[in-house]
Amino acid sequence: MKADLIHYLSFNGNCAEAMQFYKDALDRDLSVLLMRDSPYGSAVAA
Image (tube, rainbow, N blue to C red; front, side, top):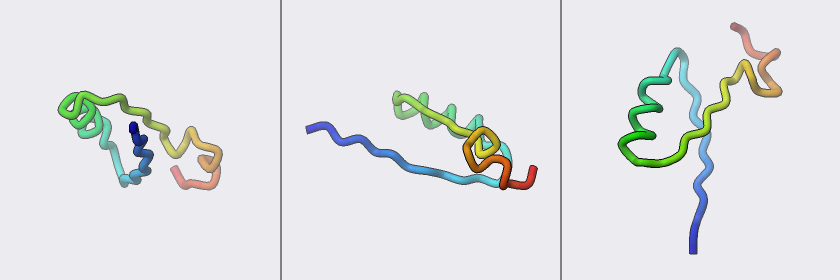
């Protein structure tokens, strides 16, 4: 049985390099949605 794990992480700053590292190290797919691009983006201070 295959289980999907969907989790949400929030960082203050730029963590693109770290996420790329874990994607490569774990040999997995990575989907990233920046808060500014989300439906709540206008509610978040830049």
